[in-house]
Image 1 (cartoon, protein in one colour):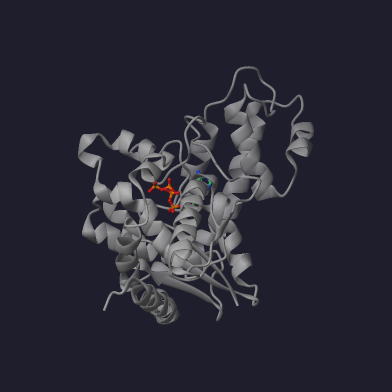
Image 2: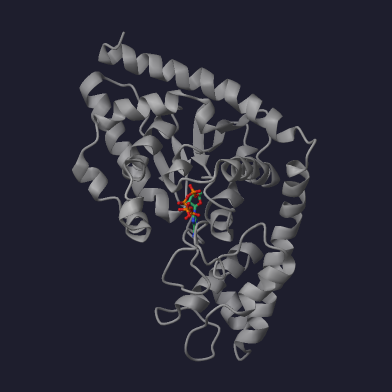
Length: 330
Ligand code: AQP
């Protein structure tokens, strides 16, 4: 059976960017019984930001609750916690020996994140993140990796590592394909549309969090920066409006052209209010389900993780044994 792997890092509260670029599709995809789906929480990757331990636990459980709220809950789909499957760390170490410094130096996410983190944040873990991501994918023979645009380069590196290893030791890994949707693959910050909407900004006024209540969402959208002129239209000189139109198009199911026609001659104010209503309407039911799972006494998160852990461990351990065998590791 074909396999699909993707994940959501517990580095902060999940954003509308994570939802539109990736998670929105995961519920529907995971209902396809012809494929096995693995959606995991890469909590080892989260260590690169040295989170408070209690907060890391909360965010990890919250990520599982969002996955469940997005509809990833079927017999043939699995949610698991990365740290509970030790094969991820072990294969990372092995793959470090099949990855060059030159390749890691080219990773734009590292340059971006390390640049923002200052010298204290230039950690080996952050540098090595793409190798662990390769291990995350290759352990499961995943053919497909649905991600947002920002992660595409990492999946391409995974392909290179897998091909290199296969050439040296014979067929071992399935070479995966990144699948990036056309619309909404890179949702931008509402206060600075030149940068990506991200979980981990200290100032979250430009990021819509799935956890935000209705008033906060409305305030963030009404205060979003706009472009010069007054037309609700896309274009190279209209990064803010382009971003908001993409959000409206994806969530509302209308084409950008139709939306431009619909708002022709109407001001930014009316457009933003409609966008705020649409975002609230989309997020509210998800948040309700998420909050139910997060309530004390709900064992849904633990039982989902147990179900996922069992299958993930079975596959990951078998793959690791095969790799060790090929390398002569006793
Ligand atoms: N702004 C975005 N637009 C579209 N897709 C996005 N994704 C992330 N940001 C956007 C996609 O969401 C999935 C999960 O992302 P992740 O948790 O693995 O980490 P990330 O890509 O590093 O996302 P963040 O929110 O920016 O996290 P931090 O702040 O920790 O770095 C991925 O498929 C990603 O492409």
